[in-house]
Image (tube, rainbow, N blue to C red; front, side, top):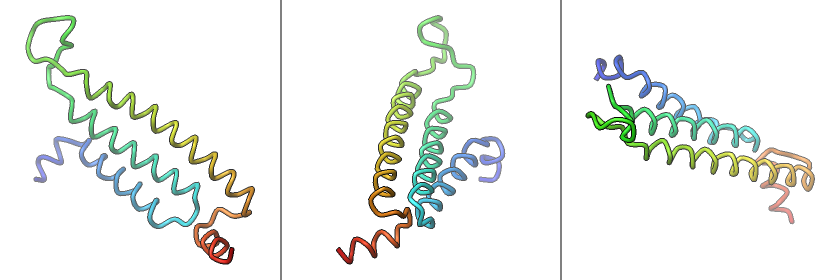
Amino acid sequence: MIDLLATRDYYVATFLLLGIGSYVMIASQNLVKKVIGMNIFQTGIFLFFIASAYVEGGNPPILTMSEPHVSPLPHVLILTAIVVGVALTAVALGMIVRIYAEYGTLSEDTLQEVRGSE
């Protein structure tokens, strides 16, 4: 197991990003920090998909007919996921701006108290 982690650094980086992102989303009370944690988590997922699609000595399937071929599908999926992630971040930040304008706070606990008293 140690040899696998020593030769594949991207697995370590992936799990660090996933762990940091999860921790920030769970532990933080600030809504902006939760969005930042979500983006860190997404980056870990992107790294995992791209790194797992890597083929040693692989060639593009269009240019040559030599083996082994590299599938372009994971890269296309990640490009789409990046666009969706940017849109999700923009919508989340827009909602956070509206929440702050309405309630004057970004703390999750304070928002729950204010919403409970309404």
